[in-house]
Image 1 (tube, rainbow, N blue to C red):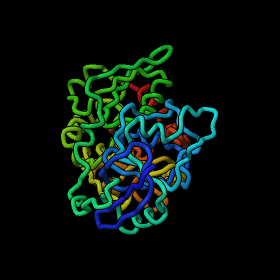
Image 2: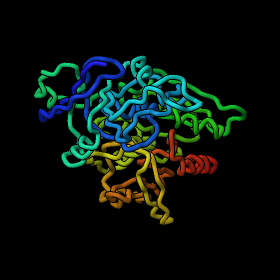
Image 3: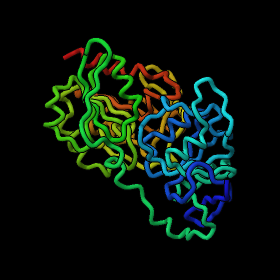
Length: 355
């Protein structure tokens, strides 16, 4: 592989080696602390517009299995790693990460100090950057970059209906804001007929499928950018049981009259501790987001905080008494793990039983 450079918008330059697809790619530089889930992260629509620093020192040493993909499309802008594993070892392995990234068109750079990069982001916050083979790339142009149009770019274009094996227990409309495939899998295995709708579907379209419940999916970007989606959620509030995950959680709060804030460096990885305020139990969760619901606004909008992040005290989940709705910032469907909070889907099923 040839030389590659990671150049930051402040002019810092890191030299390494190119892997995956050769070329130049600009994005918002973030980091994830997961030890596994390489393929899941690279195919997660929530990474739209971002270059991802993987903190685990050897990247994808168990190889690639296509069954682990969260989406058939690639939205991540690139991967930054310390060391690439060329000869993975796992009985499920179908190819190594180099071939996968080249096949899927993902730009990567290896051989850089990911510890230094992670500390830089933790101290200064997320920053724009570029992976390139051009050592003279003009870093000043990076300051103009902004992640925009993310939900529109990651949502499906036409409605899709999926049926479970066996009897149908409930019909669930899944609003696709950049949904991970694992959400659909969890609904299907619980006997749900899943109607996946584009992000800009109207209230009338949603209700025309006669849903027993409505799911608001995860997705990328700033929740406040999605004014049309928020208006639809507001109109649907209380009409059917509603469950929001990640971006869906944030937009549900905005629809109820709350606020969201941008985090300094976000929560990304499979080891985020979250406390359930009703039981006192702490769960280790999978997360991928750069924004959070403002905890201070919840009482004023008639909402109740359910989960908080143990590390920084930010909001991780909300209940909406009287509206038959709840939401989680973390991923109960975590593909790659941990899956300690999959019971959230059972809670949603129970809500749909009471009609």
